Length: 203
Image 1: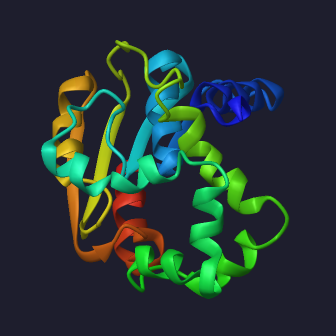
Image 2: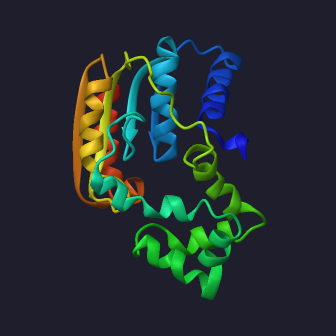
Image 3: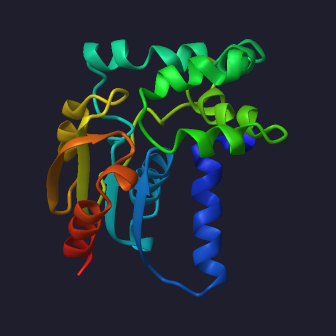
């Protein structure tokens, strides 16, 4: 399970840059990818030209009461075996309900039903958010790269105020953009607008 710790993904990303001889990259991440992106930018500032974080705020952004209410499922995911069985029961009824008809649900079900894919997905939460998990460091260096934070108004899992508060952890230039009407799955719900924002920021 520890293989899913964010720090391991950060190390893997830096190793890939080294392997391909890339001094610095434009980093774009959504959800857990955003968490990895924030951490790379903080710990390896020389390797990130610009950062785009989609949906998920800086790891140290203050946790609001609304965020605690929205993130109840993260505690549920900690119960190994119970979470898997509950999500799959009755043709994935609970899983479908949690997604609120958002995203490519049928494809998700097909992919998560293969082997240990569901457990692997839940291990992101278990490796990084469980009480015994290391979690984010108590402090991180400020992000030096110019950073764009994007959040969507129909996100049922992330409080947008936390993305706004991420500005305090960015020393480089900061911009916040809000996409109206899109769910947490911004790349599926608003691909044209997302690409427009990313393209404009990275030029």
